[in-house]
Image (tube, rainbow, N blue to C red; front, side):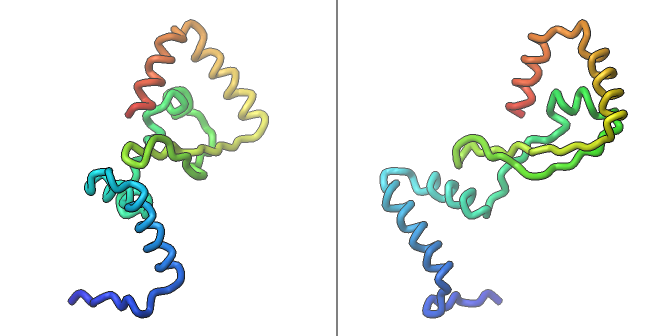
Length: 128
């Protein structure tokens, strides 16, 4: 059974949220309703904003088989409310000996690679 919201007992946060929605609607009165609804879904995280997969990156292509401890530590959001995408911030860790060995392996991997090809792949990944 769905309960009826008690508007008489709104918290201050709920009132601020309602005011923010009213402001958005007032400031964008010429914008189609469905577009405004989409903006609100993103803004209030009612709709999940897509996350760029780490697997779709040059970074992953070159490091997936490396013994680096990697974690997603947060996100940066790019694009407009309607076309937004979250791009992960990655953290990695290894001791200095492991990092030295990693750099040597990375140098071997990138020698002879067509930089323009890598740049094109990077652009494709960013759009995925």
